[in-house]
Image 1: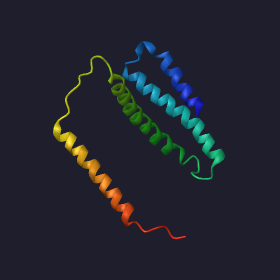
Image 2: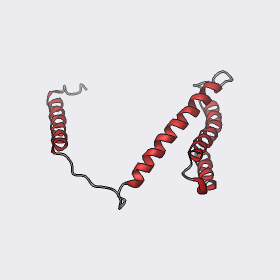
Image 3: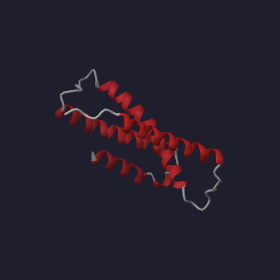
Image 4: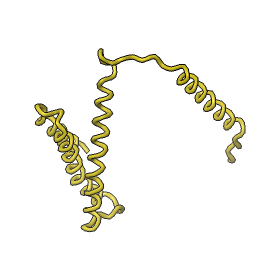
Length: 127
């Protein structure tokens, strides 16, 4: 759905001066969710038999969809902010503890052993 993505881009373009404000994030999440629900609910009712879109199903869809948009928008913003710091000059590189390396190597060896065991003991498909 291009129009909800476009509405989100327009929202953020209009809020460049207040990009770090939480109201920008919340508003963007609600703009995207609202425009997606308007177009999405119309598309679902026009193209699909189930779920049925009626006056009894629209309020729960709007409430749950709005809450999900706020939650996942916040999570996505935090993840994006973290990704943005990777590779920056101010990022501190820490040495990896030997125990972490051994746990990773042990997990990889166990995964490889279980995969090999499954391959060797699996029954061939019947034709």
